[in-house]
Amino acid sequence: MIRVRDDDVLTPSKEFIKKPGGPAGRFRGIHKLIIQNTEKFIHVPTIVVDDIQAFPEVVEYIRDETEAGRMLPEIHGLEHIDYGARDDETVTDHLKQCKEFLHHEFGVYATKWYTPWGADSPVLRELASELDLELVGVKDRIEPSEVVNAFKHNPTKAREKYSDCEIMIHWWEGGANKLDFLTKEF
Image (cartoon, rainbow, N blue to C red; front, side, top):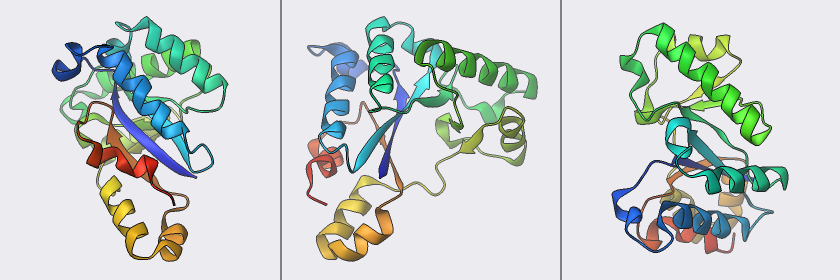
């Protein structure tokens, strides 16, 4: 199964705040694209805890979709900040608050911390580990275009290589070309 890491859920996007349905509608639309292929994809929204609370309908939606087995919410951060520039106490406090929020609101025990801005260091990894979290930065990220191109050129080989990987998107990214992999036949 391919994990679709969806970052920045749900930071207020200037582009989508003005559109019908707003950020909540865009997020639900992305999720619906992902679950068209539930045997191939699982939606992994990375939650910005302070921001998502402005969208209680999205919190409820994620709770329902998580209970139905169509989402696996994980931590992005309490705020959408560079945690590499914060002191250890702040990072630990934020991660604890995030873990509590995800457990309380979605009934999950977070296992991964998908850092904003790709923050990554031995110190951040240790702080995450102390809270039973795996830090996942962006160093080894797989872009959707890489997967799409691989399937275009050699579907058999691509299926072997990408059958259990994680690709990264942002719910607010525009353009069908960035997300058209969700509708491809793999």
